[in-house]
Length: 535
Ligand code: AYL
Image (cartoon, rainbow, N blue to C red; front, side, top):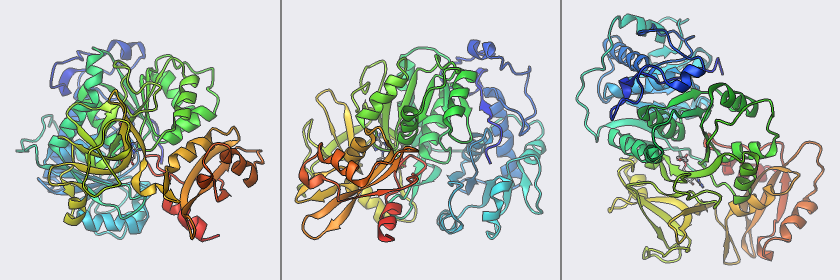
């Protein structure tokens, strides 16, 4: 299901809390011919754009219906199991406005994985689309379909619920405190079990203030953010939806990433900001930009979610010379962003760093070699620990995992390896657990992956450790070749051998048709470990 590609469009200062920037329709939107009809409109699933006041009314109507017709009240959990759409943020905020808790699910999860999340989070209601219903049939829970009709008995349709709310246009009057839970987002579980991350209202407020602080310095502008990243994931949920809507920016919702679709949307909607993950940057650098699209509106491309080699960043900058290509770093447990490059401050630009810490975040780099948690000076690599108002409240039903992640001083132990340079720019190297330890030396798989990707015949690459009796571990590589390329294992070995110390030469190269990635662009290393075992 990737339906039509709707968009959220802000005018009318209804949602603004600081100062109404939008009065009527924006200049830019007018030029683009998005002018909405006067007054509030009845929302139908086919409507393709929304003003801020229409958005607020839709949230008010849906919260009213969730409360009055489906009995959802404060602290109840509601699960959204759906692809990106214009209704996604409406549903999320309707739940949160009631003081209830939203939990989101990747539509690609299997029934078993879904079942684990349902047991853990105990939702009272599921919001989904017809196409995904098959996976939900065996759960005895009320269901709302995002659409105009519900084809099943005992289920409700979004449209029906909105209609039942009549003339309601104000948000529910519920007492909500900053520490109340707003969302339960599940960590990606690329290595271990997925855990429910408890995020409060205060966490989201802090995160969105941090992420948009830079835009405020840039002055009043009509920014347009493209959202093809999945809305169920913290990256899109916090950094794009929550933060940009509260800032009064336009969001263009895209169902699924395609290079062609992205260029077309940049052209049509004059997109200024594009949020991406490394595989997307990779596809930008390895495909030709289609000349017939006008992409001059694009100002910033931000990559995050997984390591991005400096080589790729440079390549992408060459492809889009008028654009700042930057990195952001964050995690679900920190309500997304910890650090981010800034075009105005000039940090993170072309350096390969993830920028400087966002305002209000403290960090230290802690030595891996000792057990006394020594804090390291600039240019020394260690584990990144962070603290601030956007740190999670803990993991749901898992006090032990919570204690391991957040210490008594409030520092989140990220499990990531990195360092600060002299200018305070944070470089994220890789995950501590993914490091390959060979003969007492350590190498980050991301470093070898970046070297492999610099080969003109290699489309995708991944490196994992492999047990070795003599050396402890050795690196092995998975490579996807460009179509019609006949690179051999020997060629790849030779290419790497010329660049690294002998103990980091590849023990084996396995050619694949594709490499599976998580929603946030992380290589699913456990899938690769199984792949090696099966050979
Ligand atoms: P989760 N470089 C290297 N690794 C990264 C980076 C980066 N720029 N960003 C995230 N990661 C890895 O919970 C890192 O291992 O959230 C981190 O612990 O799915 C893990 O991803 C967290 O994975 C933003 C805001 C990116 C958010 C995000 C992604 C949050 C991913 C940029 O500005």
